[in-house]
Length: 465
View 1 (cartoon, one colour):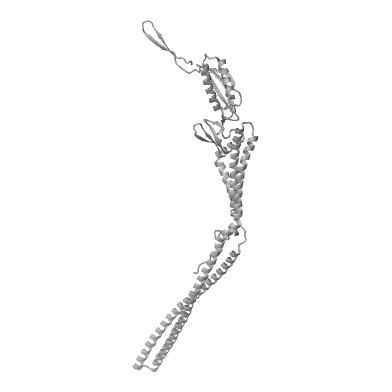
View 2 (cartoon, helix red, strand yellow; view 1 turned 120 degrees about the vertical axis):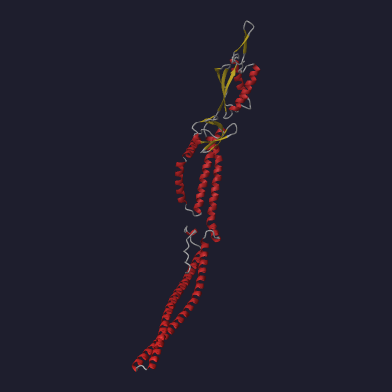
């Protein structure tokens, strides 16, 4: 059977978006329709010839059957004529009556008529078969020519259809060039606009740091700047995500993708994600509140539970701490129920100095106050100390020492530097003045008993001196 006609091409590319097809595409489509019509006509011709040949074959088969029947009739008539002739000759020789002989010769004549008619019928069917065979041969020749013509027309139609498909295909060189000319400038504009917005966001970040640092609440300039950098870093990440997602959606819309179902699917996915990631959402919300309330910022030293360290990075989800040993701790913001900021706005160096009970307390306090004044006047430390030394006085009586308590208010994160220098100076000055800083020791007493025997008694003394 002839090949089935291919389905009509589906509209693709710019046709789906409502754009007018090019002149080349229209011409190719008209040519393809013309070739397809010619191919179908040639195939219909082949089908018609095939049906006529089938009808001829059926007629030839029927004529052959009738010819076979006629030949059988001729054979029967010949046998009958021969039998009757022999019978008539025998009865003639036997001297049969004339009436009987006339009857036999009449039957012989009738048999010969039937034989002649049978032979004519055989000749007639044979001639008919020859005529039909000739017509069949002519139709076979026509079929061969029609098949060749139909094949050529089908190949031409398929070639024209391939030409149309090439012109309709978005990946054909012509369409790619045309698509680039039509959409390339807009796509390039979207990409340039996205990168420009990212660059402007980075440029605005610097100005926002200066603006927020200049208008934020109390605290040192460094602390204000750290807080500003923390907030700006978070908002910069958020702006980057928004700009990139917006640019990606515009690019998808420009290339022909329908973003409405995509956005609807994203909303459904976001709702499912919200139910399945409640802890993550809690982390983001807690991080937002930490930033808005200025609980701590980058370069602050905080304590979260049993973990303390320098804040290296803050995002809406996690806080990154680095402890004194250099270990980095990643703490989800949702797990921070209580945080202690050791460097918020200002810090304080706390001192508990123990002296022996034999020491002059007034001398010790006066010496410490003098060292505090000297430390604040030192050019290396004057900018680290905010206020004069605050003396609390005698804070407790220990087992072997009198505890003197005082504090020094410092700039954030400078309390340890100030404390180390102050302790160094206290140790040096106490050594010069002979003020003893006691340490635990043990004294053993021996008591001798009459009779020459010796008994050793030990008494632990916990005094320092």
